[in-house]
Length: 434
Image (cartoon, rainbow, N blue to C red; front, side):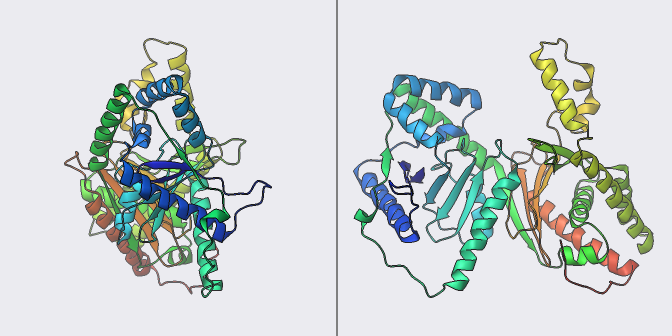
C-alpha cells in the first residue's frame, strides 16, 4: 500500500508470471503513484481515512466494523491495506536535520500512515527517509534489522554503482497502481475529524530529541572490559539521578528468543548497585578507583539480571501472566500484589519511569514515547566510535525535559569515560569484535 496526499494506492511489484519488478520498473510504478496523487488532489481533497487507525483501539474497532459492514467498497479497500506486505508513505515534508526526521517519523502530522501496520517506510520530498513501526507482531529488532539491511544495501549500491543511472521507462511498461476508494457518511466523517483532533493533541504532547554522541563508542568501553549496553544503562541511571535527585524504576527491553515464539522480558536497570554507583559519583570525596569499582559492581549486577531475563527467569512477564489470568477469570477483588503501592512504584502495571531500548550496533536512530506521563524514553545504538541517542518526554509534564535529560546523559557518559581513564590507564586499543 502506497500513501500520498491522503490518497492510498495498491501496488503489486511483480508481473503476472511472478517475476519481480526491476529497479526501473519499480521507479516507474511509484512515479505513477506520485502523478496520480497529484492529479486527484487537484480534482478534490479527500479526508485522511488513515488517521482513524490512530484512535483508541475500541473506538477504531467499532468504526472499522461499521465501515466493513455498510460498504463493500470500504471493505475491499481495508482488506487490500491490511493484507499488504507493508506500507510506503511519500511525505510532503523536507526535513533538514535528524531531529526533524525523528519527529516526523514518530507521527508527523498523523496523515498518510496506517498505524495498524507493523512497518511503514517514510520517504520525504528531499530524499531523506525513515520508518514508523508498531511492533506488536514482532520484536522491535526485526524492524531495525530490516531497515538496517535496506540502508546498507542502498549505500553499497551507491558506492559500487555511483555512475549508474537507469533509463526511465514509460508508464505503460508496468501495470498501473490501483487507487483505493472509500465511501463516507456523516458519522464516519465525524469519526475522522475526532480522531484527527485527538491525534494532533497527542503529537503536540510528545517531544523527541536526538544526540549523536561522538566522544567514544563501544571500542573504548570494551577496552576496559565492560559491556557497552550495560555501560550506557548505568549512564542513564546517573543522568536521571543527577537531574531529578533520586533513582527510579527503569525498563530495558530484553529478548527471550532462546524460546519458541519468545518475545520480550523486562531487564530492571535500577538496582542497589546502580544506586551505589550514582552516590559514589555524587560524592566529591570518592576516589576514582572506588567509583570505578562501584561502576563495575553495577555492571555486574545488571549483567546478572539481564541473564535472568533472557533465560526466562525474571519476574515481570510472570506477573503479567498472573494479572491477565486473574482478570479473565473474573477475580474480585484483584490480588493484593497488583493493588499494592510498591508494585506500581517498582514499575509494575506499566509504570516504569524510564523506558529504554538498545536498537543494536547499527547506525540507526530509534525512539518511542515514555511509558508514563512523568517519565522518559531513551533509545540508543552503539557503534565503534559513537553512540546514537534519542530521548523523549511528554510536554504536559512540567517536571520532565527530554532535551535536558539528553544533555545529562551525554555528560554522564563523558564523566564515566574520564573516570575510567583517571582510575586506570587506557589499555592498548584493538579493533572491536562486537
